[in-house]
Image (tube, rainbow, N blue to C red; front, side, top):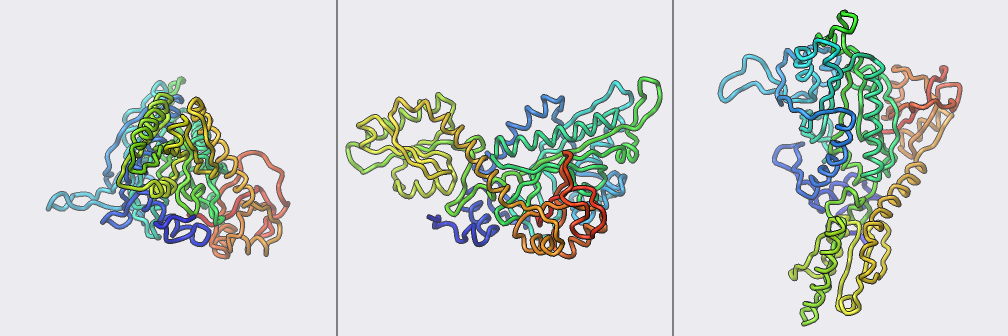
Length: 480
């Protein structure tokens, strides 16, 4: 049954439904500044779970956290021409300090390569200074000219950005791939969202990068969404910023670099993949509240016994490390609470009424599957395992769904029709040429989303679109 707070159905209008869910579940809200969202506690706590997963993983590979200025002088931003050319339309500028004009325009951080690499050029002098592995948890501003969408495409975004420097290409490229796999683990193991991983085409890669690796999710409308990217920058920035070092043979060499990042978009993707007509459906690992306890109160003497039983369950779950909420408010009915917590996507609900209190049992409803069952109190220790099972089954179901939305295609006419209409995500043999991709985009409104990294047999010897010799297999779709 759809929540009364949702005006649209997911099956009929994905994005309008998505906006309804984000607002009604109190994850985010609009602000008075167009394109800038307010991250409410319920939504922000999911980002904290992302941080709790990623931060230790980054530190395990030697990355340290740091912080650089929000504002970047124009002369520094302009040092890497390809890079700034990719961001110029989206850069927001500060031109006044108080009531005085600034001597030089200051860019509000669209990304931190330039401001960080200016410092790196002073810090790195010897091979002994390498590798340098730094990450920031911060925000970035890109003045999107397209339609903004909550979490997916805003003008200010919460994110993390890593910037690393190495002595060799092999080390740098290895770092970019290693971090891509960390992002893949986050999406699948924490958010229960299956993803495709690979490299971007030359047209779609990050401005100033040699190679861009990407993590992409497939949505229910057969669009894809980029969850994270990791870039091998080569020596493009080290040449521009004079990041060089004396090697062990006493010779000057330019360094090799990577940058990589993931934003709140990952949470938006979670909502799009798992949500249903009733609201959010949250995997237990990322859910702010994993179990909600709802007492069925009648305004009678037995209510005291019901509440005592609920508190006993809450205490035991807290001891088991389960994030638990006991909603004992008497200002809302049990039915209202059922709808509210279904909307918020809480993985498991425990209902306790007079019968449960007398029989020392509790009733369970699983949000993901809708399954209901009654358990004895001595089964309370099985709840963490039940949450683990929910997490696993959510990923398995989403993986089946993702695979059903991908189709291989050899015929040009069917390829164009499928990608243009978003009837499926198409995997096809492709020539990997920018000119061809530009024509595909003109014909369909879609682009290549990624090229698999692993060696694969070509789907066909000829490019599905232009008929030239195929070099790779690639996934094509429209995207958010």
